[in-house]
Image (tube, rainbow, N blue to C red):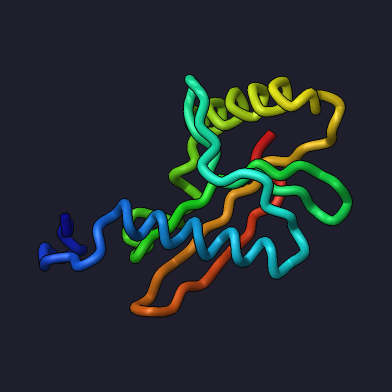
Length: 130
């Protein structure tokens, strides 16, 4: 089902589809930079992590992906507020425990995509929160 774009006109791509495409682009972006994507949309009781990847130095990266068409309400990364950060951290603890990786160094990143028609700009914020 299509949503409404800024200005009220019919939006051919709803927010869910925009988010899905943003996550696809973010995963491809990470792989092009040498990351190994371990999980996509990792879900546990407290919530979800968009991408779990391993960097070349073996750092585990828990990445939240935010995709937007406009910055009218701020940068996409600004949507990752304290509450959302805490939820991601809790999910990451589940992942680490479930996979017996508690001793691994990890990092929390935000990958934001600003979509302009068929093109998108990607900004990778490493260590966005702790």
